[in-house]
Length: 133
Image (cartoon, rainbow, N blue to C red; front, top):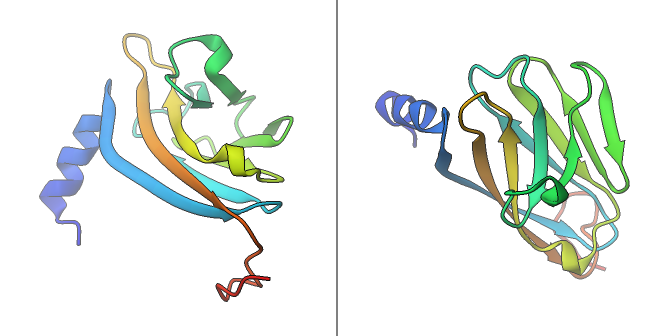
């Protein structure tokens, strides 16, 4: 359970630094996964999603276009809601997609990053019931 104080501390930690909060997700080979990224005070900032260190432009898998329009780059899409919230979808998951990703916001002095850990499992999830084929 998150207390109001913990939420405030988390919100303050996100501005200009790496968040202490990590999102862990599971997906299945051949499926897709949606990742909701949220940053405060980032309505008009460029948003991006990357794997590995996120230190260079080549680490970026997909970057935002204008608010309200999805940007698709290969198997990755990013939809910027224009409110500091953006959705990333990875399509046609592969086992090699397992690993650490970062939801990022381009800021003037220091970028904001949220860690995302994705584990891609063999087999298919049957209609959300957790049953595998």
